[in-house]
Amino acid sequence: AVFAIAYFAPENHYVYKSFQFSCISDRLYFAILYQKPKSGAANTHYFCIDDELVYENFYADFGPLNLAMIYRYCCKLNRKLKSFSLIRKKIVHYTGFDQKKQANAAFLIGSYAIIYLKESPEDVYRLILSGSVSYLPFRDASFGTCSFHLTLLDCFHAINKALQYGFLDFSTFDVDEYEHYERAENGDFNWIIPNKFIAFSGPHSRSKIENGYPHHAPEAYFPYFKQNKVTTIIRLNKKLYDAKRFTDAGFEHFDLFFADGSTPSDTIVKTFLNICENAEGVIAVHCKAGLGRTGTLIACYIMKHYRMTAAESIAWIRINRPGSVIGPQQHFLMDKQAELWTEGDIFRAKLKRNHKIAVTRILSGVDDISINNTRNRRTIQKDIELYSDDDETNCLTQGDKLRALKSKRQAKTPTTSPLA
Image (cartoon, rainbow, N blue to C red; front, side, top):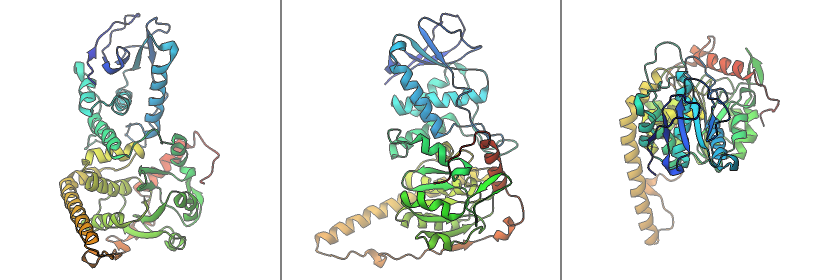
């Protein structure tokens, strides 16, 4: 579909710029308004989500809004476009002059255009920037000067590629489940790639509340993990529980420790990728908060196997699990992008070549296929530590602070449902 900029003066004569998606005829607009429009306009329906869908920040971060909020926005907009009472009205999504809310509002309507109107990220981004409008780039969950900007275009590409690769499917998305399990008291975990990766906050030796944050014992996760075919646990932080509790329950468990807030070594990255490439089911990854180290390694997998850019990978992970990938981890992923893309190309070429060999041997009557004598052989070291986890034992780390902030924030809207 082709869409173009449209300027129009609504009944109350507020001056603003808007854009139109022409594939919905003359109906859908986005605007930045000087003041709230008057209600009762004959030919125009205005709505604003600035105070309805609100990003819950850790520090200086302010977006992008999470997957549940994108879903709720799209449902709201679809209802308006299909409403009989609004059938003859222009639909105007407007935002005010808070630049952070402008960026999130633009992200929502741009995502809608990509998901439902099948527009390209570039076309949506170009339209949103028309008329000399600029938007704040998103940033990480930290203090101080931002050294890595995540643009709306990065986020739009992430949404588009998630659609292409089947990461995003609102026809099967369970928004209530998402909002339940992302809460600290209910497990604090999110799917990053359906049927492949869950990112979660690190379990403790026993379930308890510490500094206002609910900790969960490994057993608290067993029912959901088993129901959703999780087979592998990867721990990136210090040992706060005995791995035997997972392995005795039938899970594989690996330790790949590196310091909180730091970046992984090449050995850790390669080992992580090897584990994930050989795992037969879903992989659940955690560090302390399940944000920085966890997001960084999952982003490495996404870059290698889906050829997404570092920025797109970070955007997608943050859309699913806000606050992920922090500080130097962002630049680390940028530096690793070309290398991981090359590794992914080689990996896929080998798979294709091995597939051809396998087919040839089947056609030749070979019953027991064993390529390069590697069938069912696992040579992954199960415990890699390049730093001592004693460094995390007696000090308050970045992960501790992030978990405390999330718990304090969510305590304002408690739920009574347990982790189940």
